[in-house]
Image (cartoon, rainbow, N blue to C red):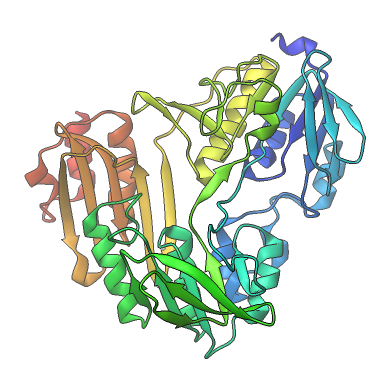
Length: 414
């Protein structure tokens, strides 16, 4: 696609990837028509604080927004909120909206994000049963977060555990149900799982792993309890479902664009249609540091792919592709993750979990592929560079806290 031929760009979706694409396009010199379509009534905003500081009331709504309304006006961005993209007419390069409007485009960026996986049990539609994904979700949940009430959280991934920490800090009685044999089973090692399960239990959270939910009970249309497969009933004034998300790929799939657990894109965020790009949670991309494709659900990924799509449309050099990174705040613990640990054959603990300041390194064939750093920023920052360099490291040296992490990194890079 020649950048000079692109005068009309439409972005479907209004999350982190969309916000970044808008900014990168204008900063990159694009002065043509730019339209943002979002199905929520709010301007693009941050999602990570929703399950943490914003839920607790420590983060005001205005601080959630990436840019104020005036920025969109100054940048001549047409913003269509509360509007749902329903169909892509690829031959005519037209995006159809739910209220009947159509938007012609020279380039289209799909930043449609993801949605919570529905809770597959009887009672999921009762009042008091919530997902935690949007600003509107938090507005429904927060009035129910009252000290002394009982909350049951389904799923012990990052969202579930972050919400459990906030609920406990707000004085609720918290029970977390997890089908897997340990918390965070999909994303980290048994070492981290044991540490976080122990921390939550010390804070007063009840965590039940290897536990099957049968259904939710209710009275007068409102949830009253979670019933386990063995018949145990756990009282619940409210239930929060955190069992994962699904990519919003239907708009692309219905238009005949290649999809497989996400909209398939190349390194430039380009789909199987050269005029259409996809970025963020909805996209399955090449993971260049791991030699495979995959979908990343992270702020880093959304920002990076927004930049990649903008650069490709404008004919600019491809921006650097960073090592995947993530974070999670629970109580006074900051977990920073670099890389993807799936497939590791060795792990090394550096520091002392009892002191609540340590890191777990994951290696495959002595090559560092990931780190989980708890209250340990130096280990996180050094590991990002080492992972991207494909550095080989001696496990014994990694675990030796008498050698500063910066010295280990410098030696490996030499």
